[in-house]
Length: 404
Ligand code: MLT
Image 1 (cartoon, rainbow, N blue to C red):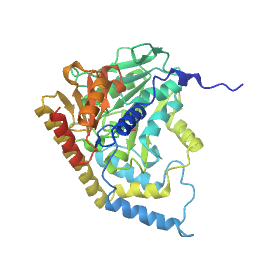
Image 2: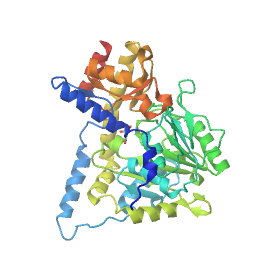
Image 3: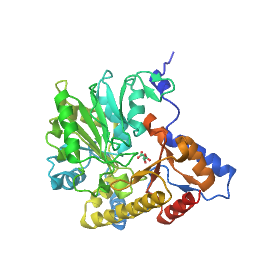
Image 4: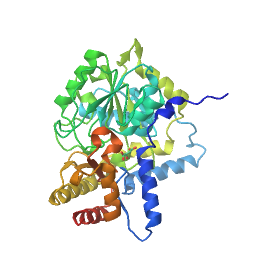
């Protein structure tokens, strides 16, 4: 008889953004005349920029000719893209990362869910609380989480690192030492950042305890402050303890195009084995490479024109972020994030739970956001708005919220 993977039965509820989508669908069906403004999931709304579109077109044309047609992509990524990433994202920031330490993929969500596969089931993971749910759920599926603890939203074998307003939504290094530490800065969902000096403490901690940091830097393009690192490899000795995840979704608007990459330095060894080798084996076995057309579009992100256009996109969304921050502050809300990140994290008013506020906002202002509790127990009492909306919609949403 076929047996299922019983770990899946430990998952609590459905995936956060699927739950929200279902609620919004039900509301829309019941109220077809209402104009909903979606500031929930961090999905972009600006079209791809001209340089990206033109590189997509020419790559499509190449596929129409026998001489330039491409079949399977190299499973770890085309050299032209890996070199562009190494040069622009790393060497230019003084990080000694080589092209062959970069693994191209179809996005950071998949990578952040899949990376745990190269680690033994008996590792203990530590996550920020609140946290991007994929890190937790993928470890639950793999049987690494222990049992769900009834009524807490937690699992028995996961170390939760509280991120609260008292610690600036930046966790302390835990006293119980984890084997794997998930960090995401600029943070999803709180929009918090940490300085290079603070990140260096995590690197030193991980090296001292032989832990591995999985560093999700999907939002690095939104960093304005000089002392906030764009990559963990800006820290000394990070290559012996850190894996970095990156995305083209949030900077270049590839949420529907799909492209990302993972960096695993060759020096990163645990249990006497190179993690780079393990991930290369995993990637080549389970993945046939991101499409050529898309990788050419990724390369165009690093051209001079591409870089200028991406600055424009990021600037557009950050104008939204500033507008939301100011508009909510003026309306008396307690707000965080939104300065080096496209997320605004607000305290729910009148002691509402975050799901109560979700319903209230949807029904009263017809605005969709994301309840903090969906990101973990310490997200309760908070709410996330995204700056990835259309500017006029964002202005309208804030005006509706101010009238609530
Ligand atoms: C979010 O809203 O948290 C993100 O868009 C989700 C993702 O990037 O997968």
